[in-house]
Image 1 (tube, helix red, strand yellow):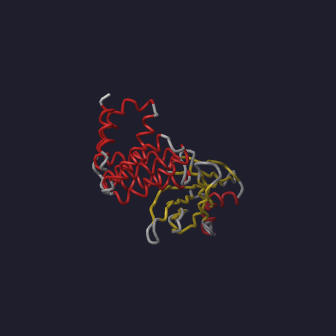
Image 2 (cartoon, rainbow, N blue to C red):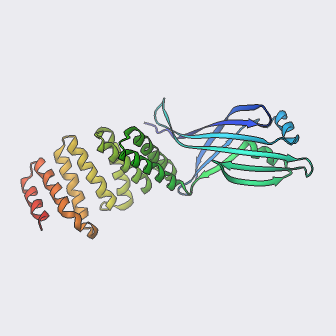
Length: 294
């Protein structure tokens, strides 16, 4: 199945006097070679017409406001918004100095401010916009994921699911599908679904997270162990005791080789024993319980 990429929508509102003009602009999204960045650009063709130029030269404060939505295509019929921004470009002409004062704000923060006599530069400032998502993209993803965790803790399942999904999608398209940050987000969302008895939807996410961690850490990394434990829970809930036992046994081998996990081993052995019993492996269960008491 072909994967749908990021698309965008821009609603442009140009206010040069008492009249507001609403138009649509095309948004282009281009991944950059540098990790953690996405280039977003758009142009409002024909946005500065004669009426707008006359309003500017009369000295009226002229503002173009763009409401930008960055969307991830999920299905043929459904898109999900992964990021929103409001871009405002304000121009005021000084008839005495014949200079234009130009200011660009993104979500209320000044991104650019300058004075120019170049008419073409003013036109471009009003109608052409380009920016990069990053390097704070990781922070944005973390905020989305943390919001999802907080909503989950308050029992808001649908709200938590929405933010965890957005964090996962944004991670994938900002950092790349095989980046460790994407693995973290995919695992978080998969575990959330698993905790809420949605094992079928959790399954592909947990398997994807495992593949990402194995590529990044090798076969015996801590992220691999976390995925294996989650997959063991998944198989147990799907009434697949043999697979649950095998997944957990592999995770346990990783924990046993990690000195930082020493304090956790008794509880891990007890869980392993329960899974061994469910899989019809009484000898393994007895050995695990014996090790849990040491």
